[in-house]
Length: 320
Ligand SMILES: [Fe+2]
Image (cartoon, rainbow, N blue to C red; front, top):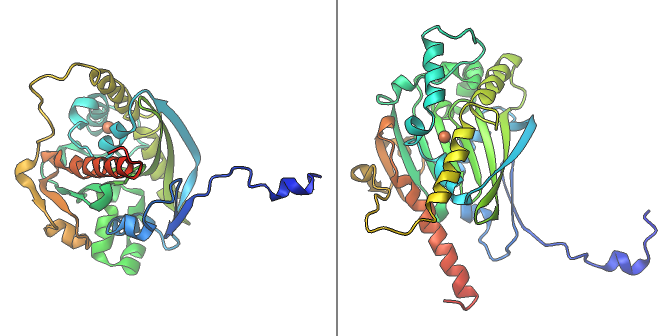
């Protein structure tokens, strides 16, 4: 139709061949052919994706309104952030104060159903690291009735059972290593991380919801999403500026002292625990305790994977 000469059609046009894999409704591609099949890469993290996909009888969909933004820092800042609860009080006090004022009746905004931060120290939670860098942070959610999905809880229980529904309604932040995240602390957000350089990263974010959910459920979901996420939300800008401050700090001379990421180390264990067994996952390692313990050991899996992948790459290129 374009009236190209015959040789043109026979050229490959230098298009890069990707290695493709699919799990449920999630499509993955790797620019490197030298990676294991998706099934092997995901491992038990597939069960965490099931908790996302099965929130509706026909799966989930991206709600129109995709947005993207950049921040001036390394991509691994975002990988850490998604599975970090510890930064909540230091990084998001303005958001927490607004939520407190709503709960005290000082706000006329009745559209948003907020998270109650007062329960953080009594809610049971944990973290888990999977092979190949995937990790999740989770907490059973006593305020599940504030979630959009709660509107259709009975349908979910009939289809998936009580336990799985409880975990679908729980707070879960998941990193599928290296560059996809599902943040579900109020509504459900998917994040795609694209490193542009060592100190610049592009984020593309999507609000996800169950296909066919009611208007009531979707309204709760979208209002919560706008409140917390997006560049115009009350939390995301706090995080991105913190990444940039960290990147600036990384240029400092290394000192003898370094606090490291040791918070939670006495609750760290290898293998599954009572909470992870309930979801049916067998992680490499994990932490279990009050959500307010805010474990840092959950970073270890991703950095171990990063170190291994870099080493493998250098070896393959004959540089190590
Ligand atoms: Fe944050």
